[in-house]
Length: 258
Image 1: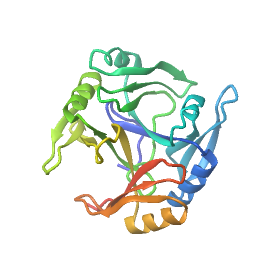
Image 2: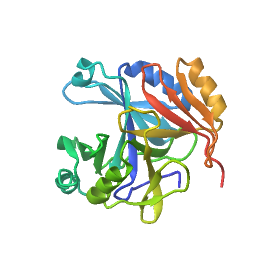
Image 3: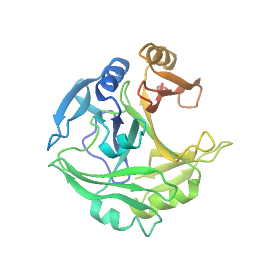
Image 4: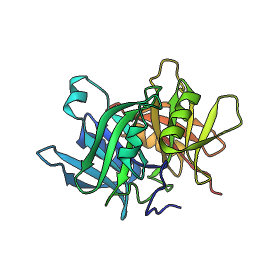
């Protein structure tokens, strides 16, 4: 279902990049994925929030880093958002489930209401209650988000947290490495597995669909990106782990036709 008009609670619905070089990131991802950008002014002189477009579809966003991240010399970072029906109600369940509120619920102009939280393993996640902005309106096509995956050092603790806060169920998948899929209304919406590299901080990873993984790797490297791993064959298509010129990690996957 490439075109989306709504998201059920518990479904990842949006990704954005907090970049150390917003213009440089727009150039890189725009060339790599064929994105154009609609720059939305941030109130009180906060710069712009650049909405990434594929045709008429809104697929992601790129913004600058807030001052506190810059002061800590933090690298560029992709954030995952999960849809909720009532962000304030969800936030009240975070502490009891072992998580931590990083930013209390707040309104984002008239487009929605959100909070940033950390799950018990330390992975940050945004919870989004939609108003005029539902999240991505185009997914699962080349140049758009196709999957979100939590990589953590305690799969079960994380799974229990999202079940308690959002009502997400999980299903174990076969394989040598623990892998659960999050399910909403019977559909797989995201994954959860162990961190791929020892010592890697728990985090949500983003996967963008491409037509050809090897070609995407070559293009990313030509644009100044770095290949961390891949191409790697998976049952769902060849994938790769990449890093943009500003240090932001992301994944690409050539989703197999079904």
